[in-house]
Figure 1 (cartoon, rainbow, N blue to C red):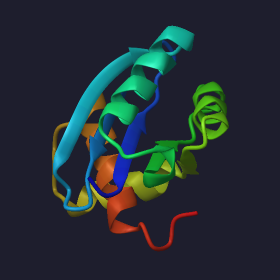
Figure 2: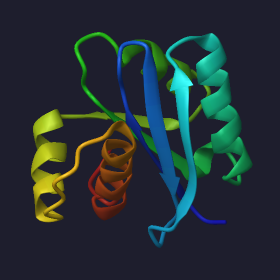
Figure 3: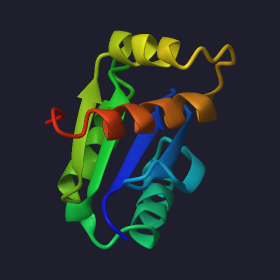
Figure 4: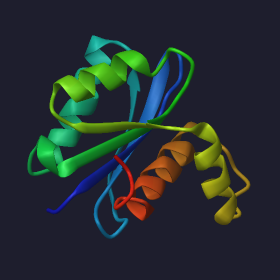
Length: 122
């Protein structure tokens, strides 16, 4: 299966995630609630599309305090999780010239960003 890159667009109540492989091919898309049940749904999708937590990198934008619980949850599960500066993602999105902005598109952009910068993200 290779490495799985998961981009997560964080919102207060409901968030979106997209997982892609080493070649940028979509592995899954999911919307989930920002609570324990929603986090478990996301983890289930990650586990169904990876060969283990050590083969996953997840990224989310820094969003005030809303990303902290999910970041802590994924990190505790042994998933490499990074928080990115929203300006980096916004500038990366401009390269694609995409005009639409939705939670699903944002999650996809974050996944593409970490794939493109996989050698420098820690």
